[in-house]
Length: 254
Length: 254
Image (cartoon, rainbow over all chains, first blue to last red; front, side, top):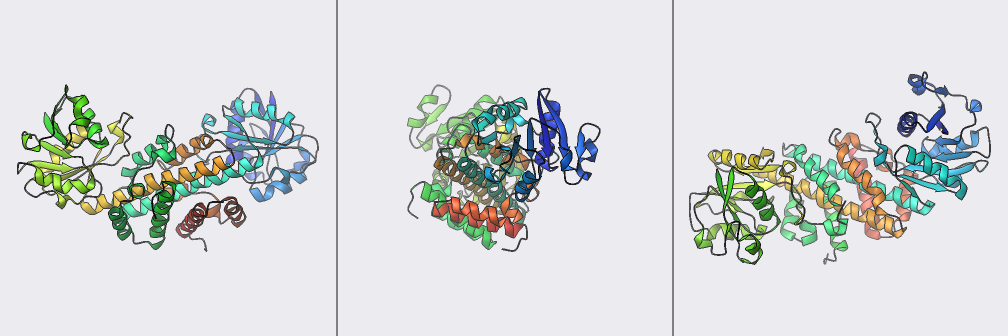
C-alpha cells in the first residue's frame, strides 16, 4: 500500500486524487490546499487540510500547484528526508527544496476538469535525483494504469516543448480551420473525421512519411489560391510559414 | 443498383473501387486508366480498359485523376448528357466539360494506399449544378456508409483550405515535435496519447475553449525557455508565430 499526500487542488491534483482513490494499492492520506474551499466536496472521503504544519508521514508527497509556486510550497513543507515530487513539465527538479528526496512525476497529457481520465492513456515521465526513489514512483504510476518513462531533465524539457507543438499549436490550427469554415457558413464538424485520422495515421507512419498536400508537392497554383482565400493576415502568415516548413523538411526549393 | 465507372487508378479511385465492389447496391461497370498496368490486378473482378472510347453507359462516371488532368479527361469522354463527377477538393466544377451533367463527389479524408478505409469516417461533400443530379450521388455515398454534406463551390474551397491546416500543417507540427524529441534522444511515441487526446478533445469542446498552455496564459518565462531550446531557426519561427496567433485569438497583448 502506497500512501500519498496531494498538494494543490487543480485539474492534475483532482485527476490523481480520483485515480489513487479508486486503486486498491494506494491510499490518499491527506489532501492539502492553501484554501479549503475547492476541497470541501471531498471532505467525507479524505482528510483535507489547509494547514501545512499538519501534514502526516506519507510515502510520497505530490505537489500539483502552478509552476511558479512549486519552489515555495516545497520550502514550506514541515519535514525532511521524505519523497517529494512535482508534476510540472517545465519546473527544474532542483527547484524543489533539497531537504527532501526530490522527483518529478509528470503526466504528459491534456486534462479537462470535467472529463474522466483514463490513465492508461496518460504516460507518466519520471525524473529522480536518487536512483533508489525511482521504483516506488514507477509502482505508483503503474498502479493507476499509466505507462512509465524514465527521463532526465533535458528530455523532460524537450517533451514539454514538443507537447506545445502537438497540443497547443495543433489546437490553434483547428481554431484557424474553424474560422475558415465559418466564414463560408460551412460546418466545422465535417473536418472532425479528418482531424482524428490525421492523429491516428502517425500511430503507424512517421509524420515525415505521413505528409501529403500542396506544400509537399510544391503545388504553387493551389498554394496561391489558398492564400487568396485567407482574409486574416495572421492566418495567411501561418499558412506561408508552415508551407515553408514542410518544404524545408521535404527538401523542396523554397 | 447504381452503376459506376471509375476513371483513374490512384488512392481515391482504389478506395472507391473497393467500397463500391463490396456494396450490394452498386456495380463498378468499368475501370478506366490511361495505363492498364495499375489495374491489372483487378482484371478478373471488373472490366478494365485504357481505351476511353470503349466506355459504356453508366449511371455515374467518377473522375479520380490529379487536379491538373480533370478538365482534359472530362473533355475526352466520348458521350454527353451523362452524370460526370470529379473528386477533388480544389478543382472548379466548371472545369468539367459541360457536354455532361457535372458534379463533385469530394471525400474529405486522408487516404493511405495500404490501409483499409472505413467510409463511415469519410464525409462526402457533394456539389452539383443541377438539383436533379443530387439524389443519386447522395444515395451512392450513403450506400458505402458515408455521411453526405451538400455544399457549394465556395464552401468546398473553404473546406479544402481548412483541411490543409488540420491535416498537412498539423502533421508538420507532429514532425517538428518528432525532431525536438529526437534531439534529446527521447521517444516520440510518448507524445502519441497526447496527440490523440488533442484531436479527440474537440469532439466535445470548440478549439477556442480547448486551448491551454503558455501562449494562452502569456507565460513569458516558459515561452522564452522554449525558444532557447529550439536550435532550428524555422522551428523557432513557427513557435513564435503560432504563439502570436494564439494570443491574437485569445485577446492577449502581443
